[in-house]
Image (cartoon, rainbow, N blue to C red):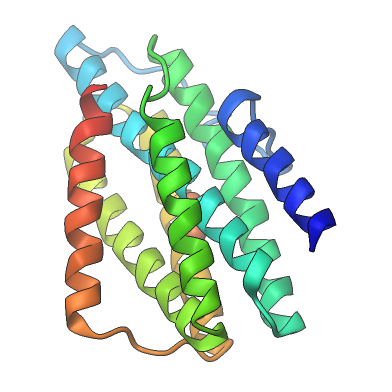
Length: 206
Ligand SMILES: [Fe+2]
Ligand SMILES: [Fe+2]
């Protein structure tokens, strides 16, 4: 247990303070940079900052859950998904830099909160843990859909990243479902939606 705590602590520090790397090619790698007005650039930047912050939280959630998951198959599936979330971190991080901005200053705060939620969900047992994960991924996919509506039409680079992330998140939700996720009660789901709203509103600006 102590060993895995140290490993996860180290991963946490790296999530927050070191650049992430992707083994897959970045989805926007071959795409040219589009002409964007200042306002469009700022908007795309805000949206990508929100997405990056979401990926920081995903790291923390998956970490919390991997620490507490009992079933080895579930733990393995969580690890694979977490690996892809690191790639999402790398893609959004680079895109934010290209757009001339920085990641959210609030990331350490959301990271700590998400880690606590991940551990708490994990302590309730694998079915609830996976249920929480499935619902999170559903909500993230829906949220990425809304970003595809909002991102400037010509910003093909940001859009390619968001599209690939969306595809991965849907796969993560299916994985959680296959591993036996429980359906969360409506009040919990609503609370999650509300928390996500607060978080996205803040990290768009700060
Ligand atoms: Fe992700
Ligand atoms: Fe995911």
